Image (cartoon, rainbow, N blue to C red):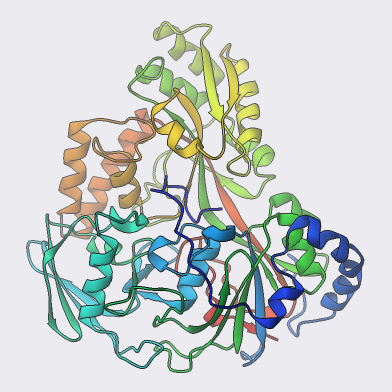
Length: 546
């Protein structure tokens, strides 16, 4: 699965690995057919062994504790859904969660997002704007690449120019658009002066952009990648296994682990059984049903990362029937959000309020929580001349809970006389299809700052504007906010934008899903507060084995 749900220019190009580790051939990708038969007998034995591991004991939620000082040593094996030959070690091509987790282990960004999706310094020790917010000076901390050379301003500019190359299809190219890279320069080896095309108060978000990793100047190949991250490359076999080793001179402190191995396991059942059977210590992307089945039983630890994925229906606001805001307002009132969270997410999440970014910086949490009101929905539909409305809802099994949510919402709408036909679309082309076709669709988004959500999805020229929200006055308000230096004033402007979206926008945001991972009982240091895609998600340099 991709690491966020923005439509991508295309999958990452395959990066051939030079060789595979010796033990990779013992489990060359934990695929269902090749693994489950072997695991079925081992799982019970492994589960008993795992239940006795771990010094911290198990809490009431089955997650255990992280008491005691970190221990150094050992290899942690992490199972992620694989991408076969499309897996890559080029951090600027990373699309899959496995790609991004490897990139985080091997490379660094200038900044990354904290749990509230505000940027935190990484390779950048500090940043400072001029008075007009169109020139930012970034000072680098003292850090070294794996081959010993220091990270410099030239490496930063080379990396950003590589990402922005018009001949390349890098995911973060759009995020770097505010930078005038021709005018930007290295003032000295540890100071970069970024010139911007327009005033940008949230420029640090650009430094933390998805995929904006720093590589050594002149890098042409990633067969044996050199980064400045906490782990060094040992081997890479796409779709099978990647082995990394601790980088002792890492600027943020050497990892506790000696080695980290990523193992491809395409299906959730394979990842769970590998965890139960002791073949891996970390299993990424588990379903709510799986978590419920194992939580509190002492075999494995379940970690829930809150507010990791917005769950919504997207209404196209420029075509009937949703070009009438009264119809959109009626649809807001058709939804029983609590029932959708229970039924589509098995309760593993929180209800939404038709706005993106619950819990993130700038979120308008003072707005009243919208609830189901079928009588008022009928009134609005009658006023719009839309009684006995028939609508097609596009959905797909491209994301967990989509088809279940579509069925639940269909039944909720029927109580107000709205007939929804659920149409299942091809998951391979779903994200690109829904940008232009249809009128109503299932939608999801991974974590990103609210201002990025606004810029990428809700401006007239946004490339992923799934609701076709085109309003020049809204665009102007966004430009005013991004060029406002005072944070309080900027917060007020973003609040005005969100109040309008809450009143008449095209996103019916019904919930925010937990992201769920499982670990062996002896694994410690896994963050329980970081949404997927943020700094402390898949932060294996801070993990240890008890």
